Image (cartoon, rainbow, N blue to C red):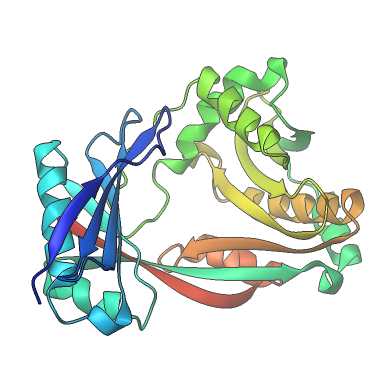
Length: 293
């Protein structure tokens, strides 16, 4: 079946990315598929583009996906991209299609959920109150307090060596302005950002942090955004300590919250162990495929 690939204009543009869009059109003019290519412009990710390709089930195996993919890859190359990533659903047609077109699987994530009603508050409190010599916990909601801004910004590099298997996300560059902007973005959409941090008592610097975003209504599920400890401070149980305090605060401050969600690379055994110990239950998996241009 002859396929026309029609480029469209997408108004979805931000300071950190924009999207290119193509529509697959059949011989009768009906839409048969779409391709969205998100082009990242943030410092450290100028090499990266993300593909979302969809073909109507009745039109598969007729060249629609290949035609749309060719258009998206050509645009990525023309823009100087070296990496295109895609996230097909496990067991979907996309998981079969992408490897046949040169993509390789680079990352598997396990998504887990902690039902807060099942959380053992007494055990969490005991864990939080257990001494961690040389460290103390602090926490805040919204934007980091000014007196902690510099050291919190510096602590973001703890995410640089997070296990991501073979995925090429680049290295995200954090400065004080970006830290504040990220917190404002959560606030602007009506949600609440909670942060718990471990502070090294030797110099008052932040050794690690964990972030949790709670819906503004205080109901439904919260989403963990990241938990990380700087290399110098690993091996002291800080990750589990911080996350336990984050869960405890979520229960106290948002009593109508149902649960907490997180996702972890299968290769990140330390964080998976922490989640398992705290009662997080696997819900599903997701996959990352990558095409190197």
